[in-house]
Length: 446
Image 1 (cartoon, rainbow, N blue to C red):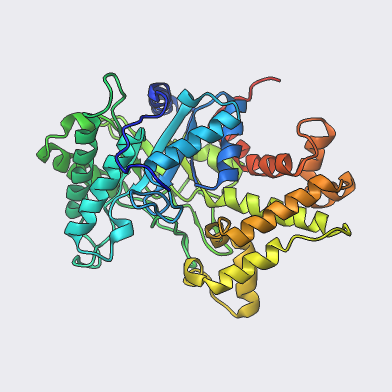
Image 2: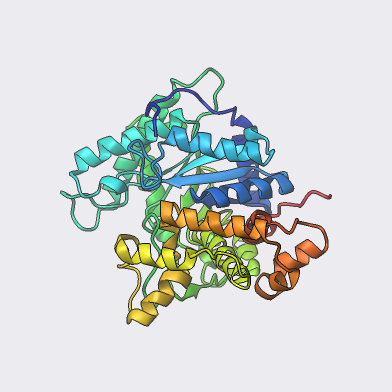
């Protein structure tokens, strides 16, 4: 894809979305009411569904990309930050959603994609990434320098992590001076107890909840590092700290939120900066657990794999519906597995077992490593064939009832049309509606 890495064309004004996020944070700190979910995905169907859901909720569309997905060299999506911003805005316009209600965020912005290089080289590239994100209109930056580089000790001391985060913040602040007059300054998220970008737990035990002592220590050394770099004003725009509330998921397990385990952390919000907790890997939590987390000041909920998991569910179900017809069938499921076997780099280290177990994991795992393969041309062509078949040859609603009962109910009451695209989008939105409810977003009355 073309375009300058440092394209200064800023997407439509994002001041409204930034102010809305700060309002949510203030309200949550005072009362425990209200939160926001961040969609961490670059999948086109997911972005369209998120745009539609934000429109129905009259809410901010909060979309984040990771340093591995999107960076100045293209990432694994092939998109720079400017291109990703244009992609999200194009989706919003297609869904007739107001683009000034979009909040773009950078997740795990730091040296992770270049961690096999020296720390100096990796941090230089990480600063370039932060700069590209700010110029592209990203309003929320997660400063994450927690990973070790080639010349680092295996576990980085927290003071080095904080010092590098301050360097990333300095790059963002310097870049913000180049934005048009009146542009909103970046908001920041910090924290060292973070899962790896795109990674999920593969262990058999629930993660340990962040201790209050560790929280206070993190805030203290980050504050000091910011002050040493002359970033005291930026410190006041730190709106979130990543902590571990005890939730995670792996191949076939979900570690549920337990309010009693997180009680001390919930009560330990700092006075300054005025922030809330950001919770990663909240995918597959129950509706009540997500609502409890918001009430306990884990007010920023990150969700990603669950959304592509829902996309995969819908596509597989539609392939079963199409399989009952006599026309030329799509081989989407078979081609997906063939390509995953041909290029196992994205799933091999996550799944264990014999061939039967691996085959099951490749298709159905909570980790949803197949999300890295949907963009492959051969798979995309099979999905297109599947959708064309279902549009060309009518399918009985009794089959929708069999394989997609919630979508069947929505079709029956006229909430969606009996079209395959509408069915897929609605199925992804079924996850987003859980997050919208947990965050206190009220659906607009039709």
